[in-house]
Structure formats: structure tokens, C-alpha cells
Length: 336
Image 1 (cartoon, helix red, strand yellow):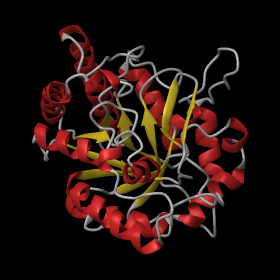
Image 2 (cartoon, helix red, strand yellow):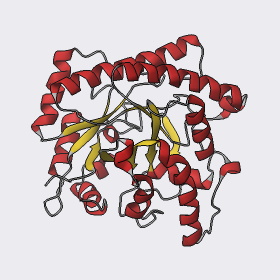
Image 3 (tube, helix red, strand yellow):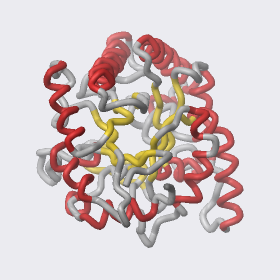
């Protein structure tokens, strides 16, 4: 059974992020297998409507031909899925590089956005994709270098983002910058807001809010001066702080990730110190998923949000391979 609104998607990148072939790393899970696991999930007739998709190896060659991309779209459609938001390969080691780097690095960042737009166009023309954004971040991991001159570095990121947003707009796309504590200039709710306002292109670039990451915004994990809560908070204090944060960031929010967080950071492979994503029913989870999502999704259609996506990033492979993991998400998401 399809969800009326918003459509419910499953992220494909949990099969990639934090995975690898080095010692101690778990191997990536193929796109075909991630699609199979997503398609098997069902609770009382409710199933996932689609997927959100990371545009890099091993799921996707960013230099794939149109024919190869259409074949991927055919495989996704074969499971009855739509494609929603796409993740541009903006990081060093993929196509892109730091948005606050030198001219060469920033040029690579813009090239990664062009890759995202080109692939989006193929999927759009195929018919597999009718909604969604292209996701980016500053691609500057950690905040130490940014802090050397926070004002100038935020302006540099904003300049790169403006150029990227113009590229996307020329392709009929919107960019969403993911609020996450590990990305420089985006590592607290206040710095994220400052960056969005500095870019100043709300029609072309907005925020991707993730419940797991934005919980750590409240706690000021990478910016204690912007903390809205202290350990030992009451339920009333939590929701007062949550409303304060979402009231500031919701007008910019154009893409949304459902997730759970236990109040800790986590990393795997070469991706470290980021918000920990937990199973929806984790006993240590800090969030009432449905209630917290409601703060972000108020008036969502007016901001062009037609789907939401579950993000199980850096789950162990055994957890990803367990059918109950995905069924619990369907049971917990709370919308029809």
C-alpha cells in the first residue's frame, strides 16, 4: 500500500557510508541487495514508496553513460520504487572537494553538483524521479580549520553554495544542505542558519533536516555556545528547545530524514564523529520520532516536500540485513 503523503523512502547509502575494503571495515552492500531489503519490508500492507540515492561507487559510477543510468532506473522501477533526493558526490576522494578550499577545490565541488544535476535529468526524463532535491554539505570535515576565521570561511562556503545553487536552478533542481555536526560551517543550528542566510537563495538552496543530527544541535556537541539543552533536561525543557530550533530552521527545510539518536556520536571507516543513527525502537533513543518529525513537517507541502526518507546510516551490516529493522521503521513512521 502506498502512503498518500508524504511518500516514505528508504536511503540506499547505509549500504555504502562507513563501509570499505580495509582491515576492520564491513564490506559495502550492493544497490541490488539494498533494493531487495527495502522491497521486502511491509507492515499491515504499508511498504516503502521509493528510495533516496547516493551518486557514487559502488552503487553508481558518476561518469556512467545515460544508457547505464537508465538501466539503474529500470532496476529501481522493477521494485515499484520512485527515486527522490539524490546525494551529490561533493567530498574529497569522490568527485568534489571542500567548499571552503582553494579555487581548484571549489571547482571540484561545483563539478560534483553538475554530476548530480546530469544524473537527475536522466532519472527525471526516465520517469523514475518526479520529486526530491540534490543534497550537499560543505565537504570540509571537522570544524578546526573553519574556526581559524569563522566569518571568512562561512562567506567562502556561502559563495560556493551560491554558485552551486545557480547551477542546480539552471537544471530545474534545488539543493539541500544537510545539517550535521561534522561539517564545517554547518555544525550547529546557529551556524547552519547563519550559512543559509549568507547564501540567501531560499528558492534554490535550503536545509535537509535529519532527526539524529539535529538532536545533537540541541546539545551543542560541536558548538557549546549554541546549546539549547543541558544533560538532565525535562520533557518540557526538551520540547521548548526543540520548538525554538525548528522555528528557526523549518522555513529553510526542503528535505527531511527520519532517524533516531541516542545522544552519542558515531563513526565508521573514514567517516567519524557524526550523529549516531539508531534503530527506530532503540531503548536508548532520545526522540519520539513521530512527534519530533511533526515540528519539521508543519506546512511541508508549501516548501515542496513530497517525501520523507529513513536514514539508517552506519548501521552494522547484520542490522541492515535484518528484515525487522526496516519493518520497525514502517511501523514507527506514523503517517498515512
